[in-house]
Amino acid sequence: MKPPRKLHIKSFGCQMNVYDAQRMVDTLTPEGFVETASVDDADLVILNTCHIREKASEKVYSELGRLRAIKEEAARSGRQVSIVVAGCVAQAEGQEIIRRAPAVDVVVGPQSYHHLPQLLAHAERHGRALETEFPVEDKFGFLPPPKPQAIRARGISSFVTVQEGCDKFCTFCVVPYTRGAELSRPVAKIVDDVRRLVDSGVREITLIGQNVNAYHGEGPDGRIWSLGKLLYRLAELPGIARLRYSTSHPRDVDPTLIDAHRDLPALMPFVHLPVQSGSDRILAAMNRKHTADDYRRVIDQFRAARQDIAFSSDFIVGFPGESRQDFAATLALVAQIGYAAAYSFKYSPRPGTPAADLRETVSAGEMDERLVRLQELIDSQQSAFNRAAIGRTVDVLFERAGRNPGQMVGRTAYLQPAHVMASPDIVGRVLPVTIESLERYSLLGRLEPAASARRSPLPLQTGA
Ligand code: SAH
Ligand code: SF4
Ligand code: F3S
Image (tube, rainbow, N blue to C red; front, side, top):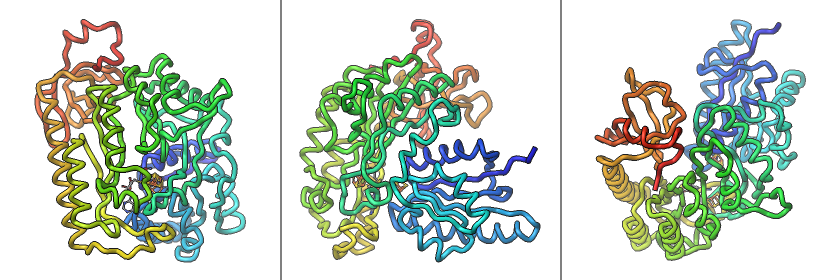
């Protein structure tokens, strides 16, 4: 029997890339590959790249420089190392990668990675291969569902893709170009995936998509189902402790999704709802197709449905034309909403997007300053949110052993890491924990033995 070949995969960017990386491993496992954590002993190295900001995509070329040296070193001792570039930079700059990086054997876009075995075989026989056409075919349909490697459980929490691509065309964003048009998977396939994951021990499912609440998949009744309706269906599956979804667009929040937050205890009260800016002028220039007040109204609807709901968001500072007043409107919106967490970025012009043609008006220094001010405000909100947990008893889904002996780690409904001293058999259970202190971003607490005894056999969700 041939010895297994070792595969090292490095992923950049969003949750979709993390998910795709796992599917690439699942696709290559039947070909005799096993994963290795070290790049140095790998026979195949895959860079799963991100194109969202300039810094992210420039990383690829520096990584490739390092990999080229590793490949040449291995060749001297008679070992062949193959290099694959996958993900959104592969999609956007495939030809350039082939031209600039001769060490690369295969370039494969996000819609084609299920062809990796064929592309690798092609590269071995005929030289380098490039596949960035899309859609080649429905990649989700490529692996027949009954095969266990179609989607393999890894731990307690798992992503499941429900839709991919985006038709929104925000003027700053590459995603509609790298991931293509919106495509929703049929409900039956998602239910199948979730069932299989739950059967192998997964307790928390995060439905992912570039625009997850634009989901409009074919239901078993032949009608088009919304994300809300899909969540109601998944909540019926026995064994699911927690459901989440990401990333949502404010314009696609519909009444069924709001109702789902009211009705489904398993649906976690934590929603990532990017707004990008608090200024209507900038929102219009970004082609977000909603105003700051529209966003406030959506937040109010969520809050009316579920009192303990919390939000995170994404922000861009320094978009072309952003004045001091526009930026002040962003700070005001953040102050008003009050976030549990948020990501903020300096605007980065991306080739091929409409905003790249706009004259940049915010100096680098001013952009830095705005980013710092926004991040300080967000940080203070996040700290206050975390501190508010101290003294409370909250539900924690336990995932794994902690760094210190005897310590176990899980997450609260709001994804805060929570540490307790407990026996390892609590992995996979949702248990009440009284939070005693806060260490940076982690909560430290103790299990509530009395409370767990009070609850029915295996408390799944004890939230509001
Ligand atoms: N689909 C999601 C996420 C898209 S990318 C959404 O609609 O919100 C994640 C975040 O990166 C975006 O929310 C945005 O804040 C940021 N981003 C995207 N393009 C950017 C650019 N050109 N410059 C700076 N930040 C950007
Ligand atoms: Fe990009 Fe806008 Fe689509 Fe989000 S909604 S992926 S920011 S184009
Ligand atoms: Fe990056 Fe592509 Fe995700 S550009 S953020 S990896 S969709």
